[in-house]
Length: 91
Image (cartoon, rainbow, N blue to C red; front, top):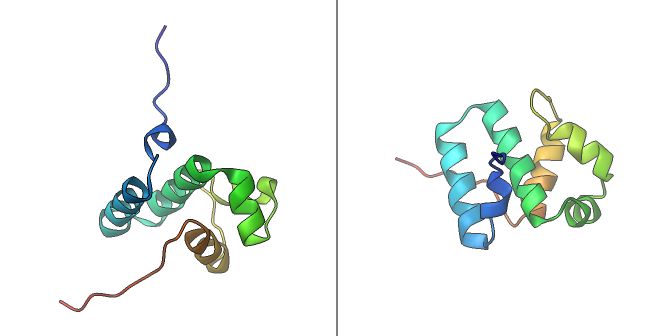
């Protein structure tokens, strides 16, 4: 019986989470970024993210599900809750 691949199981360190989010932010589109934040939130613990953001678990699952269109404020709250931040690098 085949098991379904779940990337959240491999996001087991701050470095893995950072590398994953950096890659998706650099190469992905907005849907990819939302999905990636959902994976990271699941890896960190949806209850912890809910507590840190002040949002309910149900709201987080809905906001970070495929095809969702969360508010930018929600994205920032989740990023901050997982230790992320947005930086601009001049090239």
